[in-house]
Image 1 (cartoon, rainbow, N blue to C red):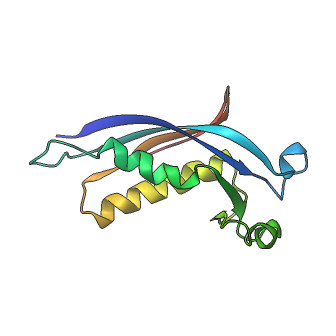
Image 2 (image 1 turned 120 degrees about the horizontal axis):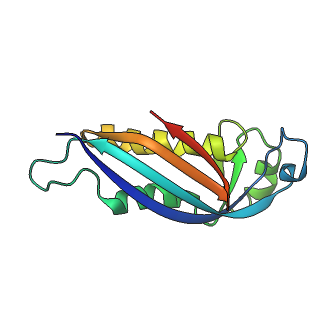
Length: 134
């Protein structure tokens, strides 16, 4: 049996897109929303596919953080005050959707869970989201 679950969560974080020409090239913040659909085979003993708190905790690594491209010169300026969350490219909603999906899928593999992300949406603001679907 294949089962699907859904989890919605939120985090507050700042980012900037250093390779973008426009106002988003400046450091700014959002109240991000993330919707995750996971599917697979639930655990035989608990009947749970993935604990909703696991999903929330993995996404919470971004909460109240500065998210930057690992090559961004701001990393060196901010690092003495807090360690930013670094991405392999500009931290757009598209890239964060891929990054969160990879983190969740890696957790499931590392814990021998038969589950994976089938769809994810990362909302940067009302009416604007990036979606990755299997």
